[in-house]
Image (tube, rainbow over all chains, first blue to last red):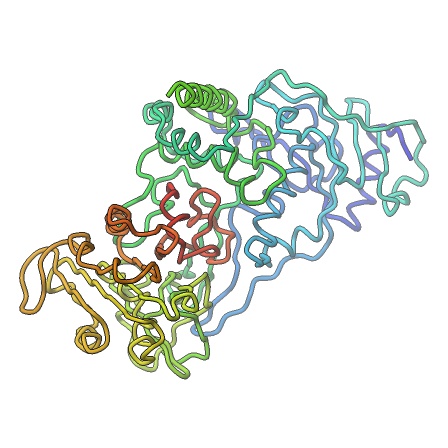
Length: 345
Length: 237
């Protein structure tokens, strides 16, 4: 079932949807960018068609809707405590295939890993339905096709935006009533089949090769380039790590909350225990840890797919212009070098 | 602490103080309705624990992780090598072994401490002499009845030849101590399949979500803290 909506019709549908759903989409926040006179595009609730940024990749991923950068997990009063609560109104999340696929990847960690389900993730994730946004292959940092995350069938609506309005494919029948009086049109969603950028995913199936890669000199480059700021992991569609932090309210030390705060393996202290030294004390160690998680370790644990969805946001956000695609291609080259040297021995 | 939690030997609990934070701590002894933890005052949570008095409340969750494969140690010659407070996570198992003669065919214990001030569990160290074959050593300094040197120096004294292949080895201590003890055992012809180690890593959640304790494809909180040596030796932080 397809529809063609003008901007005003799209606004009417959005108003109707907002009665039943919190509608989240990429939104522009003027002058809030990292540099002077730049904007930031991140996920937020939208009120009108004009709020939705559909022609540029968001700086930050859709995961922020489900796992905010910080949240209270419970509240204390002296020795008593209670778990935090969240809004139970369903969420319609407008996202591109990379961000939708990222949720399947995050879910393997948050739900199920080790037999434990994370209440704080699941209680929000269960409220979410996706509306997939048309993507023309993204920008010069995107490589979803290389990662196999350019397609998805996890969506209730498929949307193709233009300045004049919206083409809609309704995949979940429960959304049909919102489009009842709207003009019908043939629309069947198509996914991007090629990006400008391509990566060669390294073959790390051999343990001896993997061990040699970990001590390979290629990582040393990042000691002089990476500043361990963690911008890449905050912008990452799939990074899940967090730390818990207790916060006391004002001057009353008996009342406060325990908060879950996004953590980054790139920032010093991530693996540091009280009274002990860090295991990964250099930018090179931390980069190796992150890259191998995305392109080997996650898949080794959970099977099926790598942890990276090729959204390119880490490259986009890196203040030192470190490119994940260039890094992965360097890993692939190092792996070939290691294999050749092993074969010649 | 009084609690109804019943951890297996080698598991850990999350100890928590509202307004301060939470930390994973191994269980060093247990009985009906109580647990004991061995804690040094080295961080935010542990510093505040030292200010607590009898009757105060600590928050506990757990037990978490995989402990020692105690069933696999039955009827074996068991070698236990510890460094410093690494003795804590094996203490409850050692006490069980001391109280259950015949569970293991023999127990050989090597305990190393940095210096005399670092020695913990004095009474039990004395008591274990009555049940196990023991070597107690200080890295630095001398003490009556104690040897001097790293635990690795005493690996050659372990009578592996007399075990007829029927043995298991447990190593716990700081990462370098475990690494070099493992290598010393391998040099000594010990079968890597018969060695276990217990890891300690930073954790926020203890349930495989927060990511702090992950090493390669392994989560220390879920898959450890006790690992077979064949897994542990290849993990790169």
